[in-house]
Length: 375
Image 1: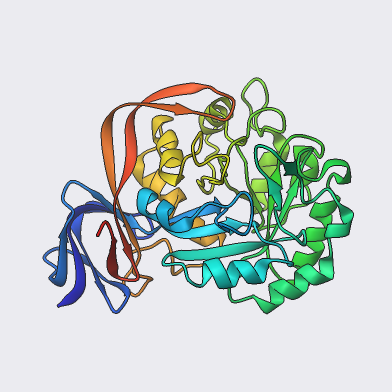
Image 2: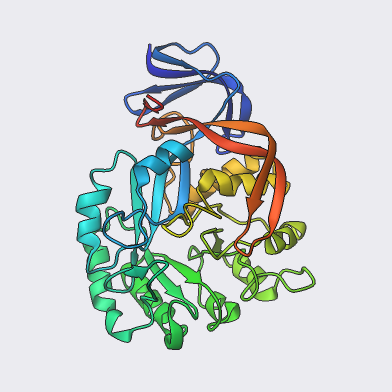
């Protein structure tokens, strides 16, 4: 008798090539079995729902209360069926200890952070005050960043750096070069943010290594990955060929329908779909991971592909093979989703509206092998 069984849902697990109506069982905090006729002490009827591995949002900002851009992870987990939040560099070496002690360790859902190169992390991000943390050389201490990353290696996934006119200003690509030196010293990947030029898309991509992540990868012009006539830029193709990971990171300024249509038309899918949810995007246009995933359904990707980009591929990007799967013995997380039909409006970051016929909604969450939400 298993601890928990989800009965009769459409199980979509790209890691195993599963897309069929069946049961999923959990025992001892892990996935125990996927198959028909499973029995559990706690049985949940999920007929008419989708059961996927626990969703991973690869780009979020959930240092709530410690940074001005932070939002609370737990309500987002409940409303968006996310079981793993990857925090994209909210905290830096100077305040990471607070993030760990006050947010990450008490959280009922998993939070895995990238450490910001800049000492205070993203410290001034709001409608009223906006200061790029990579724009001041005094805040970029490679040794201190390496030290804190090493001391927190059990949690830290890599080094986050933001470059662009809004974040590194006159320093241009230099913070990226420092971040790469840190990453090479400690043997970790980086996640690179790119906003408006300078630096250019070319300048950033040429420095990224296999396993490094370029977030905001389908941003609108300028620094878009597609040309005006809809071709994928050569440096983008070259970066993918050598193993750079392309992450959506929707946010408030980094996802364009025009760009995305062009990239998909060329067969260039993102490696990962993520929301970049923060204080300025949580009320639109990003909202959450399920909204971002729904936009890709509207643009023509099928459901198993969209789920793969937010589970298996995300787990691979952060080098956590025990996540993003329902293989027996893996972490006992699952997201239960509703695929609702209707008429739904979606906006990108420059105001283009697309009306779609489907929307993904949260219908339940399993964390650590237990039914967690709704109560």
